[in-house]
Structure formats: structure tokens, C-alpha cells
Length: 487
Ligand SMILES: Cc1cc2nc3c(=O)[nH]c(=O)nc-3n(C[C@H](O)[C@H](O)[C@H](O)COP(=O)(O)OP(=O)(O)OC[C@H]3O[C@@H](n4cnc5c(N)ncnc54)[C@H](O)[C@@H]3O)c2cc1C
Image (cartoon, rainbow, N blue to C red):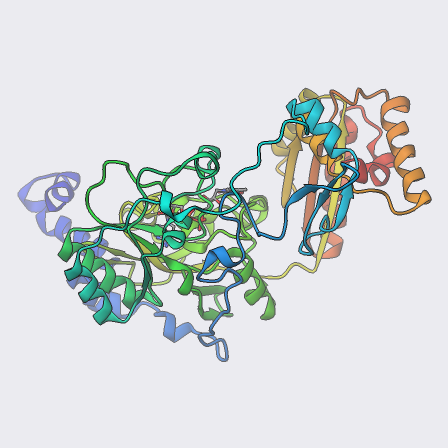
């Protein structure tokens, strides 16, 4: 590293002191290095100095329990109580009480499944209802490690269910394996550190006993990164971050919050909301995915047009690696000196270390939110409209073009209408779009929109976006309010 810095500075003998000074400054940004104790580093603002009064560390009761199996499906997405079933009349229903669709009959879903997926209800293949623990590979952990781990008092489990729950993410092939077979290799042991220092101890033990660690956040991975390599002979430790879920401080002056990495999205937004703040980071998986997982996968949120992606939101990351703890020595949002260590941590998917704490930008909860939608006769017209919106740099917080297949699926999820009036209105909307506007239901697509901010600005912004849509030749202004529920 020193040689590289000298070369970059010109390489001559005269340039050596300058290169060394520069190197000292750069390494000063990393906590724990000798340079970070230099006077310049000491003058930087520390989190405790800028902590806002009253926003001290709070324990957060996680929505997802340590024993994930108590409320989550073992072989699919989401909660045990929320699933599609067919009632005695053969109609699809969505069970549970958690969502707007819960407890509702979905009269057209069955037909959509038969037509679009070629699925037949006569041909029943029920997936296994329970995990058969005798199918699960045994846990191989050496006794010396277990003794050392017990001494730390860190919670752990070698139970089959705990290990299987952390052996996968949510790729289609992973869910298929759960339903039809079993993974060849799964974690041998699950550990639940309660804080950064616990993670340091676990990583030290892993180095001492030559074990490998796979960090586990919310388990929503779609990159197969949680799967254990089938030929891994070392003991595999699943390090579940779920018990590290406290908001450690909120800095209302600088609009940042310092949070343990295991907090899941829904808990984070709820807790921040109690203080009037939000992060605005909303990946579709936010109900279950964790802050550390977002960092480790360089996640993107659906409201990125206003709030940015995770790389725009992160101010500071603390990560435990086999070579020690890595973090910047200050909490400023941006520095011009040296490479940004955050950029190799983000997207590292647990291969370099365990992210334990993150400082993230926060904002006051927006005063006003407005949803909308625009219908296009086909996908190409939709793309053209969204391109124009992008060109004019006026995209709302969220804008998504839903293709015809997704549109049809959305339509198939429509619950039974409650009143004659709603049914009449739905018929009218359908008539307006397909007969009056002449849109082919098998071609049309929809853009869904979400505007956020203060009321006046949202209304202005909304008008700007709908004016662009209208330039594409559609009389959207008049029908916008009518079409929303067709989507
Ligand atoms: C239905 C669905 C919707 C999704 N929507 C989005 C979306 O809108 N945007 C998006 O970007 N992604 C999305 N994803 C993908 C996934 O949710 C993200 O990658 C998410 O960031 C993973 O977070 P997690 O906490 O679930 O991590 P996990 O699945 O537990 O882990 C993912 C990877 O990160 C590592 N990791 C986890 N925590 C840590 C940590 N503390 N330190 C170091 N490494 C760690 C793991 O080892 C693994 O390699 C979606 C996935 C699904 C199934």
C-alpha cells in the first residue's frame, strides 16, 4: 500500500514525505490505525459529541422472533398465517389478518392461475407441511469451539430447524429445494450475538478454530449467498444478527441515526417514526430484510428517486473482519481524501466481515403522500413516457412500469367487490379504458406512482408528471381518478 502511494505521488525521493503524509491522512480515516490517534483525527466530530439529547439507546422488540419458525413459513415467503387457499366453493382466499387482502375472497385468481400458469386444481401436489428433521444433515462442531463459545455466554443453537431456516435465502431454486428435497450442506450452528463486542468474540473464535461464518440478516437474499458450499469441510457458523437491533442514537442536528445492523426494515421505520423520522429506504423486502443485509447487498429502495439507494444513505459502517474492526474515524457524510472504504463493504455479501453498526441519514416523515397510476396502451408507450419523465428529471419518489403480465396478476388479486356501487364503478372504469379508449387488455400496462413531500410541492409535482403523460397523446387528466383501481 505504501509503495503504491509513493508511485502515485511521483516516485522520486523528494516526493516521499508528501506521499507518507498523504498515506497517514488516508489511513487516519480508519479507526484503530495509529494514524487515527493523530491530532487531526482527534479534532473530528465524534458521534457522542453530536448526539441529540433524549435520543439515547433504545431496546427494540423485533417483530421476527429468534425462533423464526414460530411465525414464518419454513418453505416459502412470509408469515405462516398468510397464504392463498381454495375454499369449499373452489375460490381463492388469502388467509390471516395482516394485510389488506387478508380474509378476502379473490374470485378471479383461480382462472388467472389456470390461464396464465397452466395450473390445474385437479392436479394436487401438496408440498411437505413440516420439516422432517431426519432429512437434515447433522451438525458437526468441535467440542473445543463449543466450550469457548459457552464461556462467552452468547446464545447459540444446533437444532435442525434453526439451521435449516438459515441455510437459504429466497431464490426460487432454494424454495424448490425446501419443498422437494434438502440442502446437501447447511450451517452446523447458529449464533445470536447481542452487540458488536459479541461479534468480535465470535469472529476471534472462528479464526482460532478455523471455522467459517455466514452472516444472516433477514434471509431475503436472492443471490444464493446464504447457501452453504456443498464441499465445505470446516464448521459453518450462521451468525444471525437479529438480536443486534437497537437504535443507538439519533442525531437530530445532523439528521443521522446510528443503528445496530440486525434491525429489520419494518422495525426500523416504525421506531424512527416514533421520533418523527424515516430513512425512506424501502426495498420490497423491507418487511423482513435487515439494515446490515441492505449494506452487504448494496440494496436499492423503491423510493430511491428522493432518498437514494443505500450507498447514498450510509454515512458510517462498522465491520468486524478476521483482521480486526474496520470503520472510519469520523461520522461526516463525505470525504475527498482517499478511497471510500464503504464502497468495498457495500455489496460484499458477508465475504469480508460482519457489519455490526451503521450510521444512516434520516429525514422528517413527509407531510403528504399521494399514490397514482397511469395506463398505457402498450409497454413501449409506457417506456417512452418514463424516459421523458427521467429526461426532465422529475420522477416522483417511486415510479414503476408494470408490464401486462404483472397488470393481469394485479387484476387477478382483486377481492370480491363489497357493494353494487363499487362493482358499477369498476365496470365503468373497465369500459372506459378498453372500449372508449380502445386499449387492448392483453397489451395495456400501467405505471404506478408515489409522490411524497409537503402538500403544495406534491400537487405541483403531480401536475408536472401528468402533463408529461398527457403529451404522449393520452387524455390522462380526466381519467386518472377513474383508473386507479383497475391496477
Ligand atoms: C420479495 C423480495 C423482494 C426484494 N426486493 C428488493 C428490493 O426492492 N431491493 C433490493 O435491493 N433487494 C431486494 N430483494 C433482495 C434482498 O431483500 C436484499 O438483497 C436485502 O438487502 C437482503 O437483506 P437481508 O437482511 O435479508 O440479508 P440476508 O438475506 O440475510 O443476507 C444477504 C447477504 O448479506 C450478507 N449479510 C447479511 N447481514 C450482514 C451483516 N450484518 N454483515 C455482513 N454481511 C451480511 C449475508 O451473508 C448474505 O451474503 C428482495 C428479495 C425478495 C425475496
